Amino acid sequence: DTAVSQTPKYLVTQMGNDKSIKCEQNLGHDTMYWYKQDSKKFLKIMFSYNNKELIINETVPNRFSPKSPDKAHLNLHINSLELGDSAVYFCASSQTSGLLYEQYFGPGTRLTVT
Amino acid sequence: QQQVKQSPQSLIVQKGGISIINCAYENTAFDYFPWYQQFPGKGPALLIAIRPDVSEKKEGRFTISFNKSAKQFSLHIMDSQPGDSATYFCAARTYNQGGKLIFGQGTELSVKP
Image (cartoon, rainbow over all chains, first blue to last red; front, top):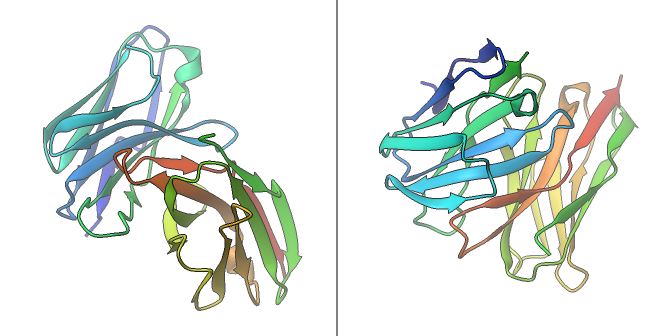
């Protein structure tokens, strides 16, 4: 019954590797997001997709590439991982019709780059 | 102008007391102000939200007070309980930016029994 799910929950990898994080939502929402939470717990948006179309692309290195195969899925692929990529990555979703646009967050993926 | 400033960074309150967390913003285009609660190892969860045409919203023990002219809003937790111990984030959104939320820096609340 999980609304927004992410896999894996933990990801430990070495510098230079390529890794992917997957996100799925079963809320029927049309918009999905990736946020990064750093070691000081600051949350910052990275990307947003609406109906599979990229609508927000913040200042994120080109090594990060989101992909949305359908409205319910948003994956994040990271090339050539660096130490500074270590963080918790959260997927979120919302429905853009209606007034409030509540965003629902997944449980997070803790990425550790060694 | 896109920033949301949150204070205090950390807060210790006795059980039964009132916890107050404050946020300030500059961008008058913000049209939606949610508060999120995050427990360790979990994702942020929406707690309560307000639109700028309302000065106060209450849900159970949680109240948002909104001062549009001062561009400030605050979260009040009445009768604080140890189970409220978590990190709280205020946020703001502009309608025409795809739902992007700008988060405050977070407040780590500890409620002592």
